[in-house]
Amino acid sequence: MPLPVLVDESAAEPLPCYEPTEETTDVSAHLSARIHVFYEKVAAAYHEIKDPPASLGIYLAIKPQEFETEPDWCHHRRYHSRRLQLHDPETLPDLPFATSLTIKSMSLGSGAENATDIRPLSPLVPLQCLVRLPAVQEWNAPWLWERPMPACMPSRVMREHYTWPWEGPLRDARHEFGAAIMNQEKHLCGRTIPASLTRVSLHVWPFFSLPQHDQSVARPNLIHSADKDPVSVGLCKLGAQLSLFDVRAVVTPDLFPSPEAPAEQQWSQMRRFRLEFHTLRPDGRWYFVGAGGEDPHDSEQGGYKISDIEHYTRQTDPDEDMELDNEYGDDAECFVEYRLDMFRTEPSRDRIEPLLAAFARSLTRDNMPSLDDAELFTHLWWYPSDNREVEGYSLPMKLGHRWGVKFIAGRSSEKDKEDRDAAVASAAAPTTPVVQWQVGEWRPGEEVMSLFESLGQQEWLELEWNRYRSTRGCDLLENIESPPI
Image 1 (cartoon, rainbow, N blue to C red):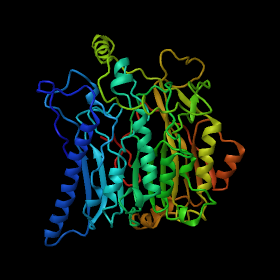
Image 2: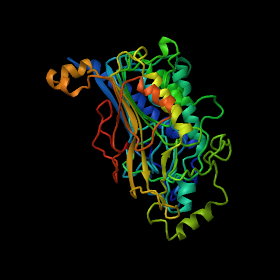
Image 3: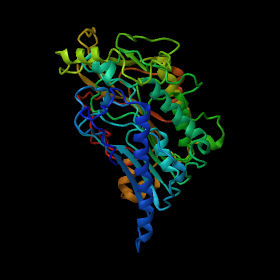
Image 4: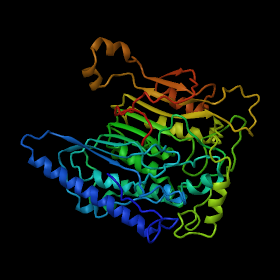
């Protein structure tokens, strides 16, 4: 789906440096019209087919923003934090024959680190499209347009101004998503997510084969002023109707249902679950610290509070624009390598253990009787800056590894039994429940360890250090893991 082409400064009325709200609304209207027409044409075409298929999937690919001429005069126009909305979602027609939904962004070579010319959508858009598919079974979200970390380009102007992921829209999108899941009829035009939906791959932040981040920068508190993280709470509710759930998100322990929660809130249908959690928490603190305990900007109160003025995209051209453009143009280092500082390799016990404990408590057979396996993991990188002390840690430079824990229930699923030879399946599946740890020399405390020991036998796997994260794998819905745009 193409976005409207924007004209350049050669026009009679040149584009302002910053996109005004009215223009964003116009782009939203353009995209909305195309989504409406697409749904209407699919409905009409399906009913005209003499012998239509029993089901089909809806796949929407949003093209990047294009200009009549590439806007060399200012880079603000190339990077977007303001989310596009779906206008009049209540008038979308139902597509009762559609059983899957995928909405993703396309790229002209840009990565998700800075998302050049990528227009992020409100998280309500895929939900509003989803509720119009009453027989939907599967939802794929390769990227929900969240960028938890800024790009760490060598140019200060590019890093701190042009490509900066504005905190206000980032927070608002998370709260919007949580509210929509928790009160669906209110936020989704009187509809609810169809009960037929049982398979979800929801990646809120993007896949990186090698992140390009500076883990020393201060990050905002994205939970305030809510009591709990809206995304985690929303994902917890969504999981109650799913059998396969593949999540990549910035989360808190509130993602997992409490064993004491009512039966309707338990993940009683869950067969396979996988969570890739970000090393950053949504409150602005980190689950991991440096090898020597380094934790810049940490505070018990969490990250910095988001201002309704300072942390949103500007509406008009400020006086400093010319100075910024001149600084960027005169910066001899603007095209050298990214200045990475990824040093958080050591778990912060008081932060990681509540997440592990919540995960373990949710896995009881009474609450998840159909569970085959469940996994919680992240990726850690030792790619410190030149200014960081590295002596004495014996860590392989510029490499990363997977860190996490996986529970295997010790029984094959019905689907596995159908898809594989019975003898092979019997040999491959463990006969007793197993908890596999891949955490290096670190060990959880006694209380947390006892929770996992109650689940089954413990296994300790070696860390596997690599220069890049493999893109050969698949998520639980068998989508190939690769960059999301």
